[in-house]
Image 1 (cartoon, rainbow, N blue to C red):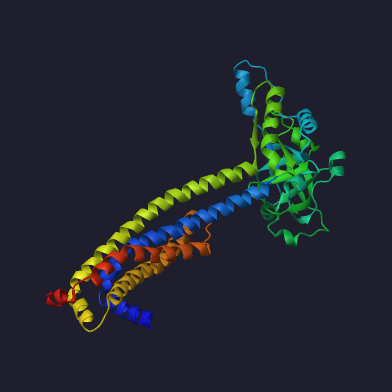
Image 2: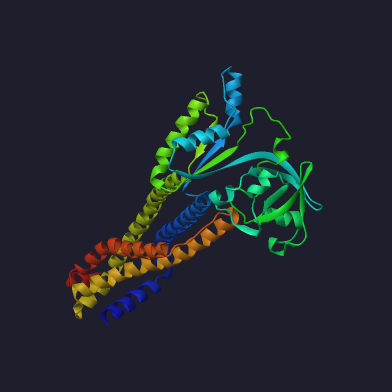
Length: 404
């Protein structure tokens, strides 16, 4: 009951000076809003990055061909290899026993057409292991089979969003009884499956590795294999395996680094470090704002103590203890900061939504952000309100009554 009385008295005092109270908590509002926006954007970016990396496969190592490096080596008169090849893959599989599976891709730029759509697309020749290694989910139909490759069938698999453009209907409406065809460059391919969209692969059309369309156009310095993906079930062995793969390829390619290694597991760790650094920097910036807000509250509370010296003297004269006076001013300070916290949270959420609409960034507000915001607000109220509250409680009642 005593606490309720303290809160009621503090609330009345703050409402008697609405404008002053609002101006006092501006620093807290901006600081809390910044914390909410920072955590929402940071958490959203983390979740999006994690989703993309997990789609690549946390156990996978990607080796991508870089033909421009061979071109540069040629200009410098250096001897260079033919790029990534089946021989490289076999050698790596022989040396690196932790590799449990692999798949490869031959990629070209192509032109696709249907009766209602035409555009450029990435034509990816893949083997029958590709779907399992990259965890591709099918929306309709099937993926490329081993027989498609062995028999040189002109079949293809398209991504869900691309299929919608090709046919102007959702993949779920696909009539499996009626064959649908896609013209790739100058050849017709039967669509046998529709794959669920995957970040970074939206414009891909998958065909068998044996498809003639992949070798129609000869481009200098193009490798037999555009990309190899190795799967290693034991994540602890990925870092060492990456070093081994790089050493093997450097030796086999005459020290020309005409390849790039992409490791989702390492990317994930790097993203975590970057996010942590971003959080630390933003925390320092918002801390300055909150400290400035706290100092502003302390100054206003000290001015309030001076302004209400006679009131304090009267309360002490009719029986209020030092603790009563201290608690009253301390609760006023905490209420101010909590009010700033509430407005700051609302402002932060609004700011986050505006940023999301303008930039199309993914945002996510964790419950922890709101808890932290209110905890910090209350903490600032206690820290910066204690000194004015102590000063008020230490006033001499007789001198306080004489104050005009």
